[in-house]
Image (tube, rainbow, N blue to C red; front, side, top):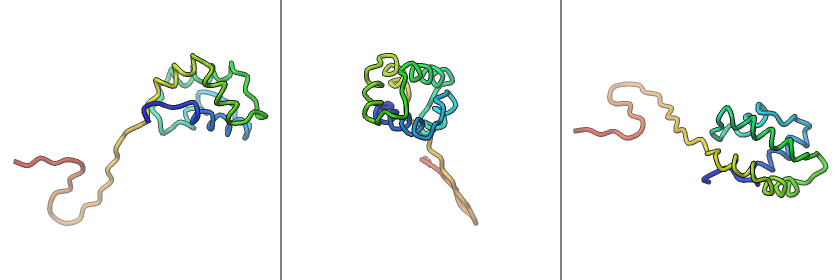
Length: 106
């Protein structure tokens, strides 16, 4: 996936509304922790979502439609990328190399 889609965000927003969680920069960052979110993006996204006047009586599909209709939210979503950090956990006992990733020997 190249960028965060409205369908994914609508699912998060729906869950937040259903569980009466306030839509804030902090709550958005918590829900989207698998995505790289700039410090300025989360508050802007929370502000734009608040402008949509979403409520807990709306379906996930209705929330998605509102998100799709907002040009500002679509612009913000296109700037959010998946977090592609690779973590290598290794335990090494004995002799020899403990190599994580690519190793070039000459």
